[in-house]
Amino acid sequence: MSELRKRLHTQIGKGDSPTDTAERFNVSRNAVYAGNRLLNETGGFSHRPSTGRPRSTQAKAIAKAIEANFKENTHNNIRKIARELNVDKSAVYRAMRKELGMKSRTMTKVQAFMANQRQKRQEMSRTLLSKFKKGDKKVLVFSDEKIFSVDAISNSRSTRYIA
Image 1: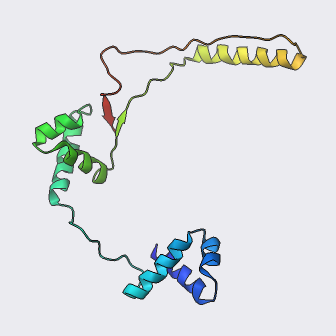
Image 2: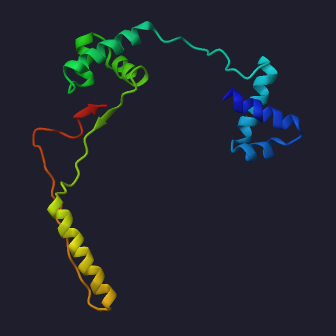
Image 3: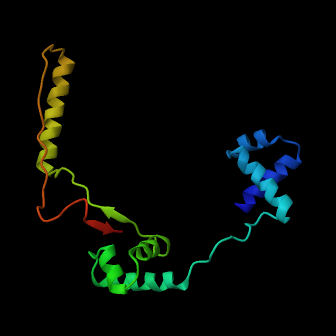
């Protein structure tokens, strides 16, 4: 990012307007102005020191415990992990997202598509296309029934998987 800011500043130093520079480098005008403001205020293009409280070391410890927990059982949910670690579930969720790069996801139901079904569907599509190419003026109506494998035990809204 600092390399881009340097190039933007060099281009403006050559006499280009901020609008032309932004278009040339495919960035917003605000990015051009922000880079110049950063140079004027700090004397360089590196990031300013961040404000706010730094992350605690507890998040890293929680992340290590979560990794160990997942090696044992990949189907644990966030509440159960929080209960076992004796921390708040939001701390577990945050450690998973920020430290481990994991996300909580739900399973989605999709149609089970077998090879023989795919073949039948392709054959039907070919015959339908050939009938249209011949110029038949008949209207064809056909329906496709969806096949879902439903697990009565699992509630898709509350069952989440972490990946």
